[in-house]
Image (cartoon, rainbow, N blue to C red; front, side, top):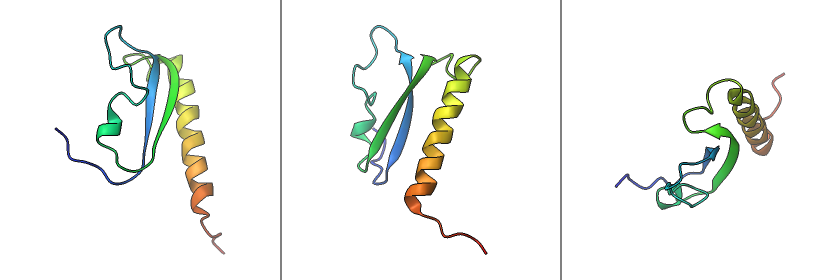
Length: 79
């Protein structure tokens, strides 16, 4: 078993899952991540989500996640 992770994590999962895969929205990551676990579902299957055309949606989801984290941290402006 993997070691527990006490921090927060974000899971980008594909909308199409294999027929007999884990039915949990977190795909079992809740057993490892002890902090906040956010799940974003993007188009495609596991093998296709990082290829066109689905990679465009994945990139947008990652961009939104990173932007949200920067805003949440409230980084002071550099002068």
